[in-house]
Amino acid sequence: MKKYTIVLVALCSSLVSFCQDISPRLDTLLQAYTALNKFNGTVLVSKGGTVLLDKGYGYRNVANHVLHDKNSIFQIGSVTKQFTTAIILKLQAEKKLNVQDHISKYFPKFPKGDSITIENLMLHTSGIYNYTNDGMFMKNEVTKPASKEKLMPLFQDKPLDFSPGTKWSYSNSAYLLLGYIIESVTKKHYEQVVHDYIFTPLKMTHSGFDFTHLQSKEKSTGYFAVNEKDTLTAPIVDSSVSFAAGAIYSTTGDLLRWHQGLMKNIVLTSAQQEKAYTPVMNKYGYGWGIDSLYGKRVMMHGGGIHGFTSNFSRLPADDICIVLLSNNSSPALTEITNNIYAILYNKPYTIPQAKKAITLPEEKLKQYVGEYTIKEGLDLSITLKDGQLIASPTNQPSSVLNAEKEDHFFVKEHDIRLKFTRNDKQEIDGFILYQRGMEVKCPKIK
Image (cartoon, rainbow, N blue to C red; front, side, top):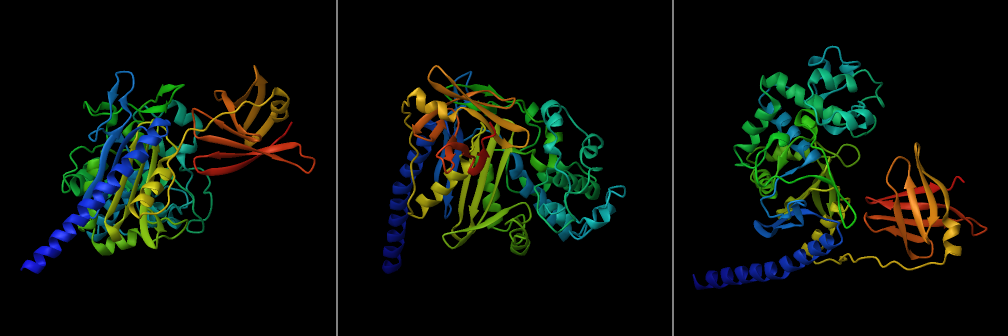
C-alpha cells in the first residue's frame, strides 16, 4: 500500500508543478494579446480534466467599463454547426432520417434536390449558394426576425456553384436547411431539440439562442472594433437569421461541458463521433475542421458573427479543450490557439509585441502613392498627407500606414501588414496584404 501511496503523491506533485508552470505562461500570453487590442473576451484551457486557465480579458461593455470574467456570455457563430450535426446523427440513430437522404424528400421543390444529400449539407459539398454572401441582406436585414419562407428564396433558385459532392465551398445556407430538416422530422423547433438532446443533459445552463432578448448581466456587448482609435458597437444578428448555422450563445464553461460530454460519449457514441471527425474534403467533417498537431488529431471550428468571434479546439488524445470567445472582430484567435498548444506541449512560441513605427522621408513615401487592386470590386488608394501614407479601401474608412522599415508597413488599430513589391527596375508594382492569416497579392493599377 505504501508503494502505491508514494506513486500517487509523485503524480499529484507532478500535476501541481505542471499547472503552476503552465498557467502563468498562458495568462502572460493572453495579457500580451489584450494589451495590443488583439483580444477582448474570455479564455478557457483544460488538459486532462484540469482547468489551467479560465479568465476574462478586456471589457464586456466598454461604455459602462464592465470587465470580462469567466461568466461572460457571447454569440459563438458557426461553432453552432457542430451542435446541428450532432442532432442529425442522433436523429439518424433513431431512424428518423438518414444522412444519405436526398433533400428533395424534405423540400420537393428545391432545384436539383434529388442530387443533394443531407451529408452534402453537413460537409459543405452541396454547391448551394451561401446566403451570407448577399451583401444587401447582411447589411439591412440581419437584425430582423426571418422565417424559412423569407430566407430560402435567398439561395434556393440560384445556380449551384458545382455538382454536389465534387467540390467544397462553405455554405451557411446548407446549415439552414439542416435546421429545417430537424424541425420537419421532430415536429419541434430546432432550438428546443438542441436543448433536449444536448444543453439539458450536459447542464449547459448558460447557453441558448435568442441573444437579442437575453436579459443577463453577463451578456457581452458585441463590437466591430475595440482598440485605441475606435469602439464600434455591432448590431445583434437575430437568431432566426443565423439559425442552425450560427445562432447559439454560450460561455467558456458551457463549451467545456460540451467537450466533456463528447469525451464521455454522453451525447454521441464513439462511433458517431468518429464519423463526424472523418474529413472528406478541405479537412472538414460533420461540422468540424479536422487537422493534426504534434502527431495528434485536432478537431476545431471558428465562429464569426456581427460583433463576435470564437474558436473552439479539442485534442481528445490528451483531453485538451481550448475555448476563445471574443466580443470584437478579432482576427487573431487561431494564432492565439496555436500558441496555447505550443505552451501545452512545451514548443517554441512568440509573445506578440507592439510594432515600432519609424519615420521615412517624404521622398521615399511618394513611391508608394497610387491605386492598387485587392480583389474584384475592392481597390485601395494610397495617398500622402502631412508626411503620412493614408490607405483608403473602396467604401471603407481610411487608415494610416505606419512604416516598420522601407517597403514594410502596418496599421496600428488592426492586425494588418503590407509588404510592397518591386519590378526589375526597382519600381513599386504592388504589395502583399497580410490579414487574418491570409496573404493576398495586390497589383498596382496606376
